[in-house]
Length: 147
Image (cartoon, rainbow, N blue to C red):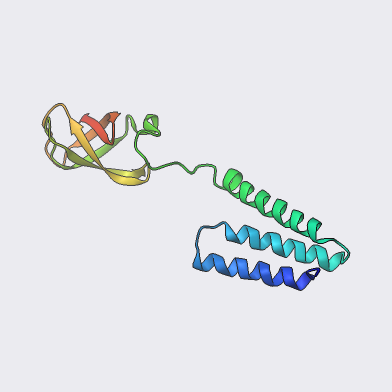
């Protein structure tokens, strides 16, 4: 049995609607690929099943790759240490006092690596409410000093 254009259209709409239930932002591209095959079949009805499947697969994978490569190039992991060069030198406000061998918490005006509050350590005692500067990243802690 050869699928007709409306089979692809229904499958494409179903995949796009499935994106509402499974919000991974991947199914929508496979749905759009199916709609592309539906349009292609509406214009040229003599395309074989293998060619239909190939066009759907290539178009869908190309749209997923385009989305993740072109439109979302700045996605970074939120794990500390993955981009410590971006964190060093930032200043923040100490929200929980810190002392040697005791951890505190520092809040930044803008989120750094996905969050605006980070646990911190210091070589000296610093009271809450002080402005601090990031010296280094040690594991999942920020090493800070007074500004």
